[in-house]
Image 1 (cartoon, protein in one colour):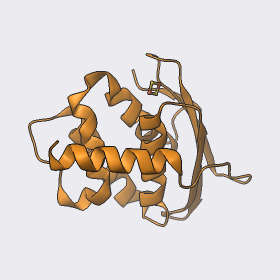
Image 2 (cartoon, protein in one colour):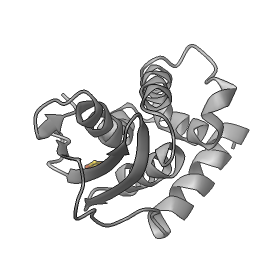
Image 3 (cartoon, protein in one colour):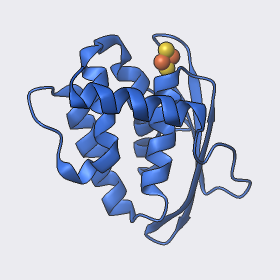
Length: 148
Ligand code: FES
């Protein structure tokens, strides 16, 4: 097993077993439902914004281990980050998941574990579900977003 696959297994297992920021935000500024049409799994993302910063973020969902772990990792990373930085992370993660030619950038830190799904193309949508919901939440899109 190479280093990336090992990290992938470790991080996905940890965040699936103990999802960070799981739950709802009663006074959320944005609430978005994300759906993966391939399996029908859904997650809901709650964002509380403070000017240009993600003050709080939580999620609920009953998806597979990868979608739960990806949501958990994402919330852990963006809590307290600026909206610009968060949008930049979305772009980097999206590029990493859809382009397996390049090495993931170092600033993704623990999020590089998600690159492990590139070995399993059918799981890319599982890993990107939360991130599509995040982009929709930050760009003021509809209340529901699909990975299609
Ligand atoms: Fe449904 Fe992964 S199998 S989100």
